[in-house]
Image 1: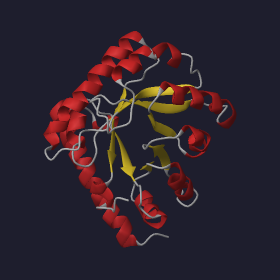
Image 2: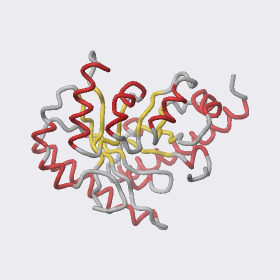
Image 3: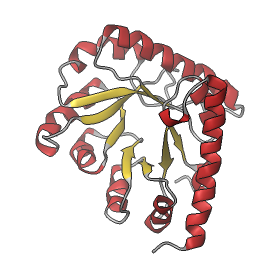
Image 4: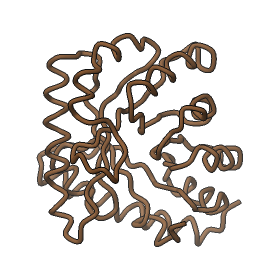
Length: 236
């Protein structure tokens, strides 16, 4: 059983983040119930995650397939999102562990997941998001916006995937306001693509600990928050 003080600390952190989500939704005229909070649990030990789940942080996001696999076996009651890069040779393992794969960064990877899903998850569609590098930043992963629009016909053939929307990584800037243009660009791209392709859902996964309120103001439906919930962590 998790220590009561650990559960209480995570519950307080969760309430602070939910409060900021509610404030951002108020500014944008949105319903906070439409926002999914993904607690980014990379490098957080499984025993701390047990306490986090007990505190209500039940949607956890991992960057690496192997780390997610090891924790999923130890942490009951969580729904797992893959939010980091997925190598094609780990696609099958990802389908086994993660309920949602947010980081599908190429049409080829989507097609591979679609093929594997027939055997790994034959009785349900696989929820994914397409990661788009809307800033065209060479240091970031993701589909180029033009490649996404050119690949729509191929994506339409991925009948085992539920393409719920788009994901992006905001700019690493000192002033969170400077990330707003990235979020605006993703929303506009989503609107444009959905006019052409009915298979794309409306979800927008964007915003992290520093800038998630701005992402919500610009239409984000999924925010990926780590440091504000778990504190600072080492970066390997």
